[in-house]
Each structure stands twice: as C-alpha cells, then as structure tokens.
Image (cartoon, rainbow, N blue to C red; front, side):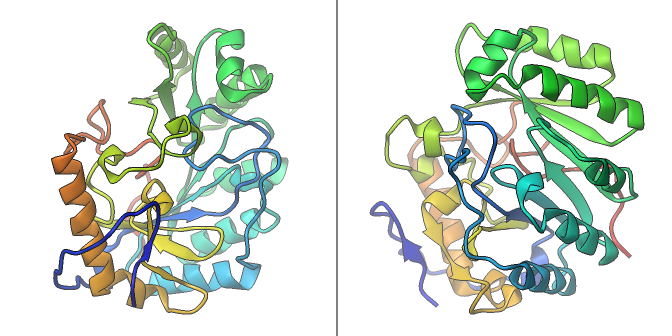
Amino acid sequence: MKPTRREGQTVTTIVAATPAKDTRFLWLDLTRKCQLQCGPCFNSSGPEGTHGTMARGDWLRVLAQAADCGVRRVQLIGGEPTLHPDGLDLAERALSLGLCVEVYSNLVHVTDDWWALLRRKGASLATSYYSDQADEHNAVTGRPSHARTLANVKKAVRLGVPLRVGIVATTATQRISEARRELEALGVKRISMDHVRPFGRGAHGQAPDASGLCGRCGSGRAAVGPDGSVSPCVFSAALLSVGNVRSTPLATILGSPTMAEVRASIHSAVAKGGGEDEDGCDPVGDGECSPGYPSSSCGPRN
C-alpha cells in the first residue's frame, strides 16, 4: 500500500509498522456540509459541501472494525455531523459497540433525537465559540449563528450533557478572554484555547504544509474522511492518505508500514519547520487538538 501524496508532499522515512490496536481514537469525518462558513475551517466545509462517497454501510463497517481493533473513542465531525442523514444512526451504533462518542457540532440546530442521544452514557458534545459579542462571533462563522450556538451551550449545561468548548483566536483583538469568562459563568467546565490551523480556509490560500501540524498525528489516533480515506488526523488529511476503508480493512491500514512512515514524516517535518512539538497541540495543556482528541468523561469500553 502506497500513501497518496498531495501538494508535493513526499514520504521517504522507512519505519516498522505498529499494531493497529495502538489506535485508541478515531475521527469520523462524515461530511463537508455545514450551515456555516467559518473562516478558520480546516477542511473548507460550508452550505455547498457534500456528504462524500461513504455510504451508510461503509460507515457501519468502519465502526465495527474500529471496535474490533481496539478503538475506544470516536468523534463525529465534519462539516456539521448532525446534518449527515445517517449521523444519528452511526452515533447510536458506536454507543452500542461500547465506544465513547463525541459529537463536534456548531450547535446551530440540535434536534430532540440528538439531545436524547447526547444524554446517554458514553456520549459527549463539543463545539467552537469565538466571542461573547454576537457580531464578532458571526463575523467568524459567516452567518448569524451566535444566538443559536449560545442557547444550545446553555441547554447542554442544563441537561447535564458532557460539554467541551474550543475558543479559536482568529485575530489579535478577538474577545477570547471575555468569551472564556462567559462560558465559565454558564457552567462550562472544559474550555480550551487554540489558534487557527493553516489548512482549508484557515490557510488563506496557501498550500497545506506538514509544519503546520502539531506532530502528534497518528500517535494513538487516525481519521476517516467522507471518501473513505484514512489519514493520521483530520488536519493531515489535506496532505496524505494512507489507505481507503472502502477497499482495505481499517486494522490493516492502521497497522501498516505506510501509516508508520507517514507518522514519522510528519513528526520530522514539524521539527524541521519549527512547528509545535508533541506537547504543543493544545495551549491549555489538556492534551487535545482543537478540534481533536476528546478526553471525555466516559470510561473505557468493556
């Protein structure tokens, strides 16, 4: 299996494969469809996006294979995962398999069925928030979304849904400290701060480069995109694919020498480019990417 190279990226490091069971966390990058058009969006999702080529059966097979090969947590992300026609079914199946499920939503619209799922044991919620001021938040999202997102943050807290919020700084003058204080006053316990990652719209027209990654890509985690491509993380999907679950079992891809090569190559590129090291993914120190690796309140699956 050869990695798919993008934007001139090459992989030359030869390293040994690692067991698929080393992967404990999996992003399920369901869709490029989203009500918003956020400036920092790492995969340029928006209203014109699509759900890709992965069918419901493909995603269900990925979940079963993930549970079999030792994955313990999955995150449904996009785009807006609640817009995917099978998103709710996939979340329910993941929970039934004993997986912890985090739903990374913009919280613009959450149906009663989604709220019911989010209140189940093993489920949790994450969102992005940009400012305590509606006009500043809306300028980032490209839509008048602030009121709806804030109302659903309050609802999540009221319902006792495990919630984490990522505040992404897009400008030097953004009211991120005020936003954090607002969220804390509302009862949000898990808040992280991050900067814009140079991918998708966040790259401002520049070609994606591995030095913009945190360096932890592929270390205990991987991502599956809406076309079935597997990458070391949702950000590195813009650079490399190490296989496709529509043609190759997930465990085979995760444990392949190709995955190990790509992981080592990214780490090397980050170090040479002066990017973040393994401990620099989250400035708050929670050990999470944003969006990223959820240390949710649920325990390991049985």
